[in-house]
Image 1 (cartoon, rainbow, N blue to C red):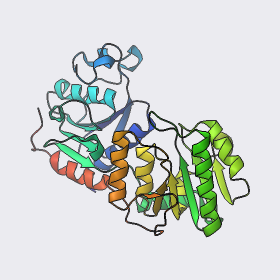
Image 2 (cartoon, one colour; image 1 turned 135 degrees about the vertical axis):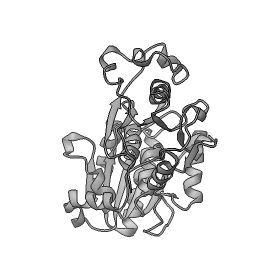
Image 3 (tube, rainbow, N blue to C red; image 1 turned 30 degrees about the vertical axis):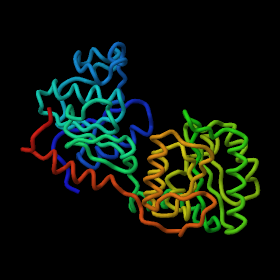
Image 4 (cartoon, rainbow, N blue to C red; image 1 turned 45 degrees about the horizontal axis):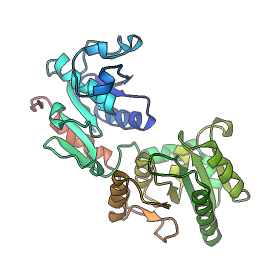
Length: 327
């Protein structure tokens, strides 16, 4: 895909999911992307992104030299703090920096050249690009890289079922005894029917007690359990590359989006009503035939959800020289 010309900044906070989205898009759009991890200080942090004045004074002293001229030709932000700085860049660069904000900035999208928001955010506008899920790098080349990086996973018995464990969040309780019991019951039942192996991975938000309980419950089942550095290098990339099915806890939009981009069947276990935005996201995946209950049957292969390249193509056209900027 042809790249836009000129320097690009990817601006995020510390959240891994925000970093992944901004960097993936930046690398598709620009020949070189500089990653800035920025966090505003009070009072800007209270109002972000509603007070776009003060420039680098909005940052702690240790970060101010990062947010300084020469300004980039393109800035891509993800997260509320990043929305403050991408909005600022419009004014500081006198309109020469084109700005893209990922996720709902909770402000009129007119303040950016483009806003990319999932449908469940229910954001609309002439410069809003809607997706079903989150942006991610998963495509055939990425999956092949994962297989190349973890060749020994090919020796595990098939079907290889990747199990991606998130963590509790507001409105989603995963670390209860009842949820873990039901999850392991259904995983073991599927293994009893199909055989194969279980490749269970923790995320950064997974409580250690959850993984301890899963390790005990799944002892004796072929596969692997990865809960952190003590288990070696994170094989996430390889698990997605080699998986015949994926099981994903219902809490993470990013993990579900990446799983649905693989092209194998994706299952989840929802044991209680989800928060409204998350419920809308699940509904969109189910309506598209991309997400299934853990105890439901589904074909091993399904159409992958790959939205990032299409978003990048649209942005290339909209951000080309000569195209008008927003407000």
